[in-house]
Length: 430
Image 1 (cartoon, rainbow, N blue to C red):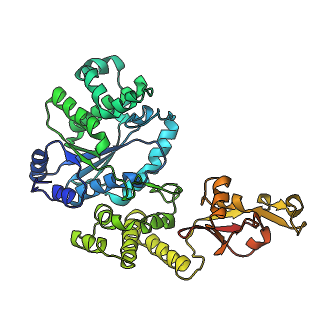
Image 2: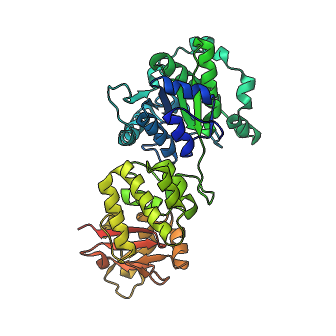
Image 3: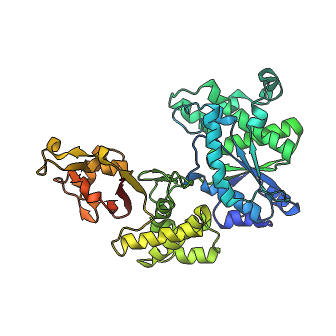
């Protein structure tokens, strides 16, 4: 990056590694220096929470506000009914309006932790594109907006081209998505003076479409800025872990599990993630990221605490760290581990299992590991046992322990472990 920015926001984007590309570096930089710039990111409501893969964009909006500008979080109440086809192999399942509204309610909880919504000049706006998309007249929209789009050009975009090259179906419904997203940018500029759209680099084509449409329809200059699509240093997609998506809502991913995800960051990613996902000074991020040996673990704990504090609060971060120390350093249970409850209905008579104590009740070990979410299937549980990765109360599970007595869970929680880093508690519900 050779451009030397004048605005605080562009300086942060470049220095901390947020910037992949920009439609007009100088034009956007000058607008940011002149006054308050409204900028937006759109989030389709395909789930009840966003996951860590969206956190880079959320942090961009946070920095936009911290440097004196106005974030707009646009909920895709309208576009979710269509589904973004970008770089997908198949069509998204269609959601009902009620499902979309429920998902939006869940996603809104995330933003309030990172961005301030108020009536000030830089107070964030929470909008829903259903406001202008739901009431569109199809023929008027085709005549007024559709005429500005070339099908030849739309087919050339990589997000569409890659799907067609693989001879995978692209419905007409999905093909309309890029027009609707472009129309969002036009409406946000017209209604709220929005000057810039942010997104991942896979959204470049959609962003450019919106800029071009706005110029053609109302002759206004607006800008686009994209962030890199992050993968970890070992090539894994950011936002995923061994047991699924790392959600930002506490009811879908506990603060302890969230903290543990960041604590497990690979050594090579620590410095980069500190710059992107915390507000620590650049020099300190570089210093911590350069640590080696066992010292890098201290940096990972700092990373986990800082990111968890932003998402779930300082108290949750402290509790997660305390639990981790109890579990790992002292071999204890910890009081913040994800917990499930079992009852006698989950048990099987010993006689049915040909167990020595025929009168006792037993719980199937593989089912316990599945129920806690430590593995996804009984087959995976068996493989974990075979590889000596399964433990109950820190004792290895052997092949002979295909079932454990229900009375083991009486009066106390039992800790299940999958490998060295993933744990859960099982309690007997009286």
